[in-house]
Amino acid sequence: MNRYPLWKYVIIAIALLVGIVYTIPNFYGEAPAVQVSSAKGTVKVDSATQARIEQALAAAKIQSDAISLEADSIKVRFASTDVQLAAKDVIQKALDPDPSNPGYVVALNLVSRSPAWMASINALPMYLGLDLRGGVHFTLQVDMQAALTQKADSLAGDLRTQLREKDLRYSGINRSGTTVEASFHDQTTLDAAKNLIADQFPDLQVTDASSGIDYKLDATIKPEAVRRIQEQAIKQNMQTLHNRINELGVAEPVIIQQGLDRIVVELPGVQDTAKAKEILGRTATLQIRMVDESSAAAAATAGAGMVPFGDERFLDLNGQPVIVKKQVLLTGENLTDAQAGFDSQTQEPAVNLTLDSKGARIFRDVTRENVGKRMAIILFENNKGQVVTAPVIRTEIGGGRVQISGHMTAAEASDTALLLRSGSLAAPMQIIEERTIGPSLGADNIAKGFHSVTWGFVAIVVFMCIYYMMFGVFSSLALTVNLLLIIAVLSMLQATLTLPGIAAMALAIGMAIDSNVLINERVREELRAGASPQQAIHAGYDRAWATILDSNVTTLIAGVSLLAFGSGPVRGFAVVHVTGILTSLFSSVFFSRGLVNFWYGRKKRLKNVSIGTVWRPAAEAAGKIK
Image (cartoon, rainbow, N blue to C red; front, side, top):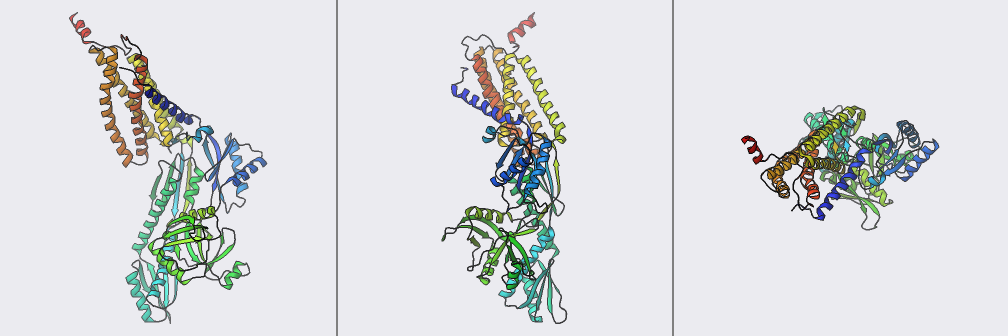
């Protein structure tokens, strides 16, 4: 009647083993470390970088506890904070000899002291929120002027295309700030151009700028269009930040707009601080321009002359200078995807680009008019441009699908695709405020939260053991298992624990003990009704199960609703709350009954159970008669 089959005990044993393994990493603590990651998309962090770090530390006679290469970063663990600070300076000097142009981000960090075998099975400590462990707070300034300038460049290019298609000859089209200046040979063409702009360019307003023999017009972006462009820029940048932070695995990031041109990012509990800064601080934007292949540009490339007017000089990935025209043909705004692949004809590694409809039309026109010439794809990071590739245009390319191939390895093609995808910001951003909230700030919160849970737990255990005797011991063990499983599940999910999360944990403990009290009282009722001890245990658990399930399901619905619609601290509370309900069902019913069955189920002639005082009706009636 009260015996579990072996497979149920096996499930309990596995759950306990998994719970212990995934809970233990939370007690190892953290060690001071230095983290190295790439500051530029064109700089790699690999085994060669690790060797340079090891050599620098060896030369400075600094001993590290561990050094590991993880994905795109290297973490070096040290025994103390003093050693950590000294090592940071040594590594910084070794990797970035030119501080004005750093290629690596060298940052202080904390890493778990968990053994390597635990990390290998993803047994890692759970994150603590910004209010407990601290974290990183960034304020990013969006360069709205750059967004408007890019838009003006795009409008100037579109105006050239439209004038050519309408066969309206112009003598020049230039951009000055956010104004597009166009000059014509006669008044008739000028009027036709005004009509064209009024029909085809609703974002521009035209003013007559003619003077002397020139027939000119100035087309400026309308104020309402300026507001729309700025709103779109900040929304697109926030979406890009969301996507980038997903790479960090932060459970509860906060990304909100502050004012008209700022974005606040809070990363509670983030461990990979340097990676967060590198990803968020990357101000990469993409531009496509034509390479100037004139003799003057060739002389400037060779260092024998000045850069021609209207051109700019950039370096390619190999450090070779490339002279490109200032006119921007396309930006990363028109690039929808970039994937590494292989050329179907030559089987060489290639990068496949996908453009939106507007970009596809512009690219088709540009390639048709510049067959045999070179086109440069330039990536701007932190206001510094670098030519990613400058292929020769072989033929007109239409349809919005572009392939870049030739003289690159598969790894280089993959890196180029990654670089091109990173240029999806609508406007450059710059980190203007960075605050690292240290763990000491939340130490009091941690202590108070820990004490509240601990003393509450102890008080409940003492009460249960006194009031329900042996069944109280079973309930206390089930409560312990519940707490163990909550921490283990949160660790496996790599969730972020905040103060609201600790409150949810205390609430889950209370609900778990409610379930145990309900079971114990049901057993008492059966004993009071005259059932044998084995029958009382069996009926007590069965009848309590329906009530426990009903109450927990209704609470679970509320928790899931908070999880679905909440954000920030509310969502943190909901994660722990829902986890606590599920583990409570397992520990209070399945595990608790397993203990009772193991203790009492083996006894064939069980005369009584230790569940405290059972007031029988007969005894009460007898007492009244006396």
